[in-house]
Amino acid sequence: PQEDAMQRLIPTLRRDGVDEGLISVINTLQICAKEISFRIHQGELAGVLGSTLDENIQGETQKMLDVLSNQLLKDILLESPHVRAVASEEEEGIVDGHTDGGYLVAFDPLDGSSNIDINSLVGTIFSVLPTPQDSRSGPDMFLQPGTEQVAAGYVLYGPSTMLVFTTGNGVRVFTLDQKVGEFLLTDTDIQIPRETSEFAINMSNYRHWQPAMRQYIDDLLQGSNGPRNKNFNMRWVAAMVADVHRVLCRGGLFSYPADSRKPNKPFKLRLMYEGNPMAMLVEQAGGIAHTGEQRILNVQPEHIHQRIGVILGSAEEVQTCLQYLQGSQ
Ligand code: AHG
Ligand code: MN
Ligand code: MN
Ligand code: MN
Image 1: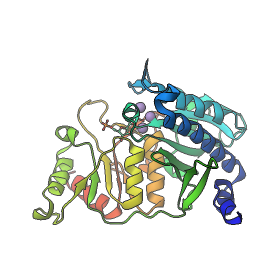
Image 2: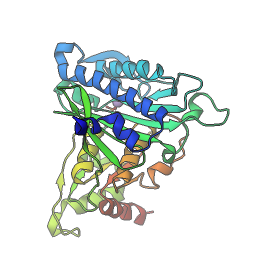
Image 3: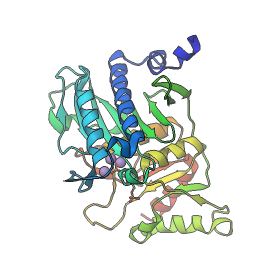
């Protein structure tokens, strides 16, 4: 029993020396994760599948689970005295919480929305920032580079529900024990292998990519007969949480690069809700997370719904990809 207690989330955070206010915020997030997990696993029985008639600020049709997960996270987080404000992929503006709260939480309540109705993988992504010490208010409070994050992570609602997060002290993995309803520590320090022969990219966008990105993928596809001298395998779940989880578990390169489909909107993934939290996890696990131009965590956000290019994963493979992109500039 003693050992079991040591594996629980809160004692692990205390052992890591995490600030009590932040522990409380992470505790709130894991309560939300369990609520969302329960509904997702009940699926059709919980009456939570399907779309709404609404569109979000990203221009996407909202699924019922996007709305429900967003509402749960918002309601539960805003009850915490430690939360100053929240920002969400599904909300146009930020929502204020407690004036004295020391933390800001940005989240993607339901990642991989297109997988909901096919009983496939989805997740929740979160990023915790400190409340700025100056007089800023509103969305401006969130406009801090990812290097300022004090915690970041995701929940993967897979065959098992997993909570993967970092407070800047390595990447911890917890698995939801359905018998006791608690997240238990199942991996203390994930490290991404430096080399890989697996990549994840939506190939159907090939024609929209920059020539250098096409060249990088062309060379991969030639396998052992081409300049890379090895065969690569491809995976694409279409939920960043699941694709990044695979990269964390066994290595790989994941990319949603710039493309020219919408000239004013060359990127798909969002900096605050997807790029930054995943970049912090990947770096903590020894990988690289880049926009193609700079380290994701160094990007100075200009607005909360900003989008960026993403190339992340095994350090050597990301470097190789960047050599193609930077060689072309
Ligand atoms: P969300 O469901 O939160 O809007 O995010 C979807 C994102 C990301 O999870 C995934 O990697 C990517 O969109 C999938 O895009 P495609 O449908 O273009 O493959
Ligand atoms: Mn969405
Ligand atoms: Mn997402
Ligand atoms: Mn989402």
